[in-house]
Every structure is written in C-alpha cells, then in structure tokens.
Amino acid sequence: MQTSRGFEDSAKPLSDTLRELIEGIRGNTVTLRQLMDAIGEQGLLLVCALASLPFLIPVSIPGVSTVFGAAIILVSIAVFLNRLPWMPKRILDRQLETSKLLPALQRGVGIVSRIDGYLKPRLLAMTSTSSVNRLNALSITLGGILLMFPLGLVPFSNTLPAIAILLTAVGMIQRDGLVILGGYLFLFATMIYFSVLGFFALRAGQGLASFFS
Image 1 (cartoon, rainbow, N blue to C red):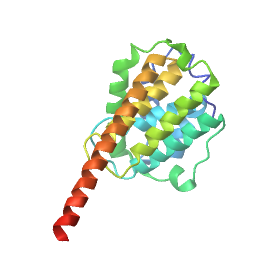
Image 2 (image 1 turned 135 degrees about the vertical axis):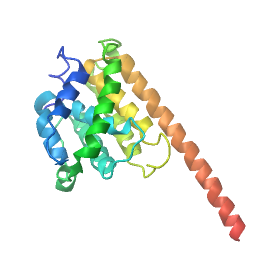
Image 3 (image 1 turned 45 degrees about the vertical axis):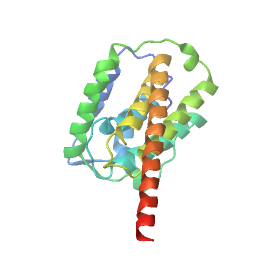
C-alpha cells in the first residue's frame, strides 16, 4: 500500500470511490485487514477517510471506535513517517458486524458526496511540502486519539474529531488546502469541547467530594 500521491490525481469523485469500497463488503462480518486489502494502493489517507465515516452520525457501534480509531492513529503516523503502517493482529482481524457498520458507512458517504463538488486544488501551500504534510498527518493522529476517548455517550464527542479527520484526509487527497484548514478548525473545536467537558467533570467531582466530606 502506498500513500495518497497516486490517488490524488484520480478524476473520480471521492464519494464514488468510497461507495465502491463499501459495496464490496460481503458477509456478516468484516475486518480492518479486509478493508485495507480492498483499498490496496489507492492510498493510506483513504483508510483514514473511510474509518472516520461511522462517527459522522450519532450512533454507537460496538468495537468500531477501538478498531477504526487505532487504524486512523497508526496509518496517520505511517503517513508522517512516509512508510507502510504497522498494526497489531488483534486490531486488523477483529470481526465487525456488517449489519451495523454498513448503514453507518453508507450514511457517511452520503455526507461526503455533498462536499465532492467543492473539492479542488487550492491553497497548495497546505499540501506542497513534506513538512506541511507531516503536520497534517499529525493533526489526523491527534484527531484519532480524541476519537478514542471513552466518551461515546457524550453528544458530538465522536462526531467532531471524525469531521476533523475526514476533512484533513480528504483535503490532502485532493490537495485542497481550504478543506484542510476546515479540518484544523474542527480539531480546535474538539479540543475546546473536551476541555469544557473536563472542566465541568472536575467541578462536579469537587462538588461531590465536598458534599461527602
């Protein structure tokens, strides 16, 4: 598998590529290994884009945040290092139920299709050098870490970092610096949101401690 350099020049809309990958999923379960094999040489960044899709909607699918979150982190690190990713076998071969995963992926592709028409090469300074692309990859890594926080029941705790990951990955694939900046904006919003949640959780903990003291 290569990085996204060869994929960036494709004229096919990104949503069509993602839809074809999803339509190729067969059986009652699927593994990350099978998804990555299907993507093949189309690019590591496409793995990050695909893995972010289930989190664009407020639904919880058991095991997906662990598998897809780890995939996003490890793949983005590989993009940063410009090498093939390493992943533990338990992440690659964990069985995910397609009955729950496929509808989430399909709805995610529907969201991607809405931005397809706006994607175009612009603000090329955001993708023109290896140092900038490494910074972009690190932002995807941070988004993956935030995505794996155990806050699945908190509204938008998965959606915000997923949008950040998707926009950054898509922007890198299509060399759209404006979309990448949108990814950074959502990443910043996620960090603010989590900081606010942490502040109120701390205050609540202090209140309980004083009540029982």
